[in-house]
Image 1 (tube, rainbow, N blue to C red):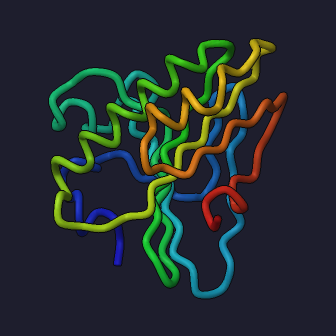
Image 2: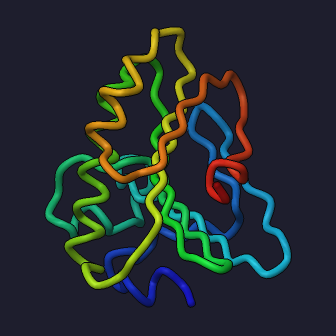
Image 3: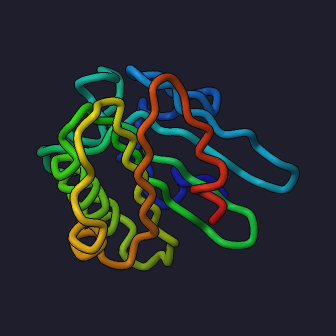
Amino acid sequence: MSLTYFLGELLDGCLIPKTRFKEKIVVTMDVQTGETVEFFSIDNQKNKDCKFNQKSGGGRVCDLLVYYKKTDTRIGLVEIKGNMINDAVEQIVETKKKIINKAHNVNFIWIAIIISHGSAPIPKSEDIKKKLGDMEVYIRHVKKSLNIGRCIRG
C-alpha cells in the first residue's frame, strides 16, 4: 500500500519517480525484493509542484519524505543542511506533526536522517534525541552522496 493512501492530496506533486534525490547531496536507496520504497520531495521551495506544505498549513518542512514498507511501515524524514543541525531537527519535528495530523490513526516507525555537508560540530546527541522523541536518529556528514538503506531498514 502506498503512502498516498494515508496522506492523499497532501502528497500531490511530491512523488519522485526513482529512489534518488539530489540537493547539494545525492540521496539514494536501493530497493530489495519485497520492499516498497517511495521518495517524496516535499519542500515546495525546491519542488514547485508539491502541495504538501500548502495543504498542511504552511511553515517549514524537511527536504525528503521516504516511505518504506516490508514487514513494518517506516517513515524517514530527511533534511540536508550545511551547518545548521538544530534547524534540521526543528524542520523534521514540524514535518512529523503535519503527517500525524493527517494520518493520526496509523502507526509508523519514525526515522530522522540529518545529512550535513558542512563542517559544523554536531550538537549533543542527547539533546537531538530529546527533541525528536521516539524517532530513530541518524546524523551523517557527507560530501557527495549517501545511500540511506541502512538507516531506513534499521
